[in-house]
Length: 271
Ligand SMILES: NC(=O)C1=CN([C@@H]2O[C@H](COP(=O)(O)OP(=O)(O)OC[C@H]3O[C@@H](n4cnc5c(N)ncnc54)[C@H](O)[C@@H]3O)[C@@H](O)[C@H]2O)C=CC1
Ligand SMILES: O=C([O-])CC(=O)C(=O)O
Image 1 (cartoon, rainbow, N blue to C red):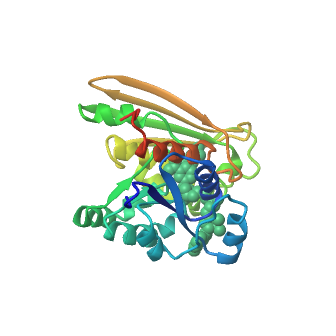
Image 2 (cartoon, rainbow, N blue to C red):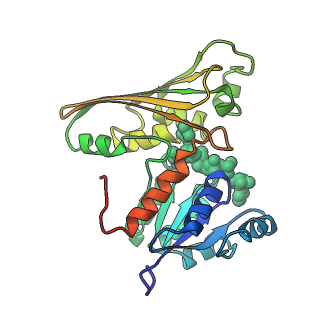
């Protein structure tokens, strides 16, 4: 934090989640200031930011690491390393939404360790990570998740093209994937970060089992989880209303807002 104990937050980049976050911070979160934004198109970003009460500068990923205490990564997964590395080298905190990409970028965890930085994966579009983390302090026997999404929320996933699966015209629910969270992270990089978040909270990406269904009758991105442990059995379902980006639930940005609020709060709920 800076001298005024104000948390300077950076947003990389200004997509669906980034814009929702920028608006929420601008509307006011105690002790939090939007200090910088990174975007591919600087002029378009500056235009959009002009509607905020306090519009922050549009800067490079490197400059953002200097100007901010916490950077929120909400970019295409391929940019995770470019955004996170300077933040971690500066010993600061990165909040990672594209957490599926963390599996291929374990060197970021080492960077955090060496430089005293932190990587924070929020609950995002999921639920119950607090209980899963607590269960992992004991012995978890199994973690299973079933994701059902409207067709629009799955289109473009590399797994579909690689396996010649055409979901455009399906009329019944179709199971399109059954495997581990690690396999889902490569096959569905923009759709299944939640499975990786669950796996990192619990038993890891190779032991977290996942089914993905495309369901033409659904309007919500639905994740159902069953965890069996020596302390508790958890059964949880979340039905996410999609944002303007059909792959991304509205609640994702709200999860980050809640986390930022927690940084400055005298009473902090949850694990
Ligand atoms: N952890 C979780 O629970 C969730 C994670 N996510 C992930 O969060 C990330 C952001 O999601 P959304 O905001 O919905 O995505 P989005 O597609 O709305 O926004 C991404 C933005 O990145 C911009 N962009 C593309 N290439 C760029 C480049 N080279 N440099 C700078 N900007 C570039 C695009 O123009 C777009 O504005 C995605 O990786 C998504 O998979 C999404 C939902 C839930
Ligand atoms: O996992 C994701 O990245 C997004 C998702 O399923 C949701 O918003 O429900």
